[in-house]
Image (cartoon, rainbow, N blue to C red; front, side):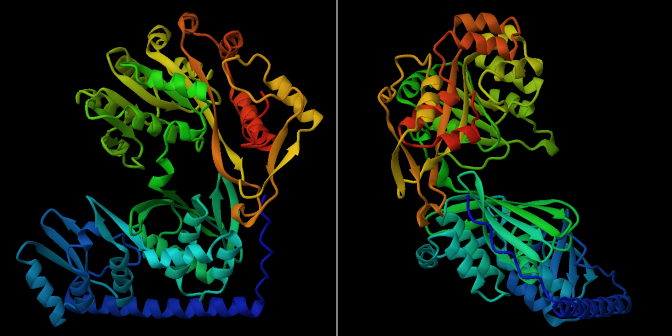
Length: 565
């Protein structure tokens, strides 16, 4: 595990008093600006608006160019049909009048008076807002030269800490660039910004584990939060409710979308950024870590003309990546593939992708009905959550479609009771299902610092016990006379954890005739497991032990993620 960051030195009473005084003076100046704006509104007989408390529609804002908005000290805050609600600093400003004359050729308008401070806060959005298709999203542009330079400088988490610690406190954009580039360099899936009493800490989730990266002062944290809100199209001044947004990291060869979630906490707002890197799902079925015997079986199964294949596992276990790998295997110009996701995170060539919008009534069930009218051959449903979606998916599988979907269960056997608990008819379920997969992701032994060692007698006993009953068709390294296993000693490449990258462990339940009869009787989880013991079933734990014998992972990792079964 990574070493914890050294404890931050507590600020002196004098420093805290100085910060509070600075904040108070700033607030006094802002209040004076708002008072002057109110007086001007009264004099001009126009309504006053506080832009520090009002959310601004970014679609409407972009109806005026940044150049005109800055010159006229004005911003469109809302568009209602053909009328624009426009906030201005001074209605008599010649530039303001010029822009209004241009807008009046297409729209009617209503003017509001706002303070210079409020306007400036909204005008900052122009620097980080752009159109992306129909959506509006913020953007960090990282040039190829800067990215290459940062990659050379940021080879470990310690390098990122040193880089940020050496930067000016007020350069929020520069800090974000370093953090984002560092996350990409270290293959982080998520970036966390967690508040403490005297600042905040950036953390990366790498290979499923959180690592502390760098501590930020309260001042830098505040600047970073404001910058993220601007880029993610969130309301700047709202700090006591959860907000969601997104922005884009624009590279020379691709764009990486970042989904941002902010929630309030006792010491300030906490942020999680999910990095949706297209490279992370550019995997084939073999790349997932599936054994050769299981791979050959799955290739035949996903090529079937109809039926339902379910993958199960908790959040972050690689279910979506596995389903995308299946889609890439079956997609060709002769068939139509449609997905229904919540939300669409990665874009696949040759596939029609749609997105759930529950607030508009486009749920999984409604979306699945609509998809069936599009004459698909293959359907991917992001998740089956309720009876209605389950029933439509089952009927789709029975009427000539191949359906891929996911369920949240602990193992493959748990999927069947879960379907029945949701209200699915056991008889039709047994006819529709063709396979159930369960999976987890284990950290790989770092190839840069891996060392072989002789398996201990205890480990040999665990291996022997775990692999009892595994079919002869499954290739297993010979361990009868002792064997060498592998572990990482820790190096800069793996941030001294001994692990780098992840590999999947899987279990697959083929729905054969015997199991089909059992499903029709609404069996319990225990009854299904008992039957599987007689069929040569390979569990996730057993698959993990095989990967330990192949020197891909360790018992510590397997026992921690999968647990002894």
